[in-house]
Image (cartoon, rainbow, N blue to C red; front, side, top):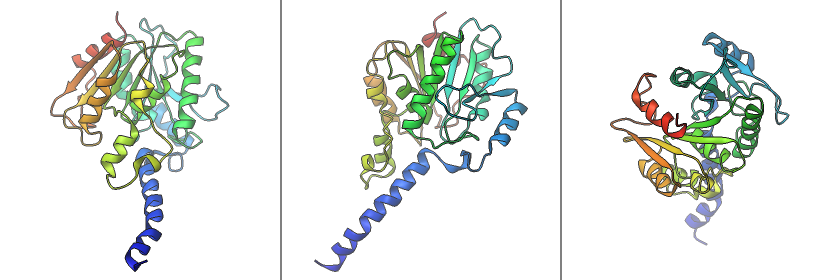
Length: 275
């Protein structure tokens, strides 16, 4: 065998392994992980912005499963929205949703991934999805329904995976800057590598939502540089009815309009949770 092909044969497994590490670090970056954000620090930061940790036991997991406003138990005529954040954030940093949703009559539950924001564990589809489903069932059983789900970026993939269980008491779903499946995102970022083999996580939102029987609102950004717009469009094309799309023109992945008084929030929420 010539030396060059032999060298490639020896190096390719290493390249694929390193690429797998790169893909996983892109899915779940270390900057907001529990390794660099101790639980006490995260809880203190959350309390500073009016949030308290939610540490009910549902799946035997320890640490805060999320954060809620201090007045979470107060009456909320439209129910509760469970938020799944993006991969570069942690639950306590997404107060934009508290501001936008509470003024429209909802409670807000900011779910935290295992391994994020001081919570013990390792983030993965296998660790997040069953735990999140248990949290949603617990919220419903405690009288905080009706329950709606909102996912942003990675959180949109998580939200879709969670809602693949048709028995879950979820009545509507909003997906902000979503993909169709993680494999296609990997192919866009690593076109020369065998993306499907680089991570066990799939987050196939097309498959996960093919039987979802409630309203779905997709909110996408015209100039998204992280999730190629074609992937959001492909997801939307495969979603069952009823569905609606909201487009933020001239916006990218994270600079979509955040101000809580904007009317696009009403359009999305009134669709997934009709008055």
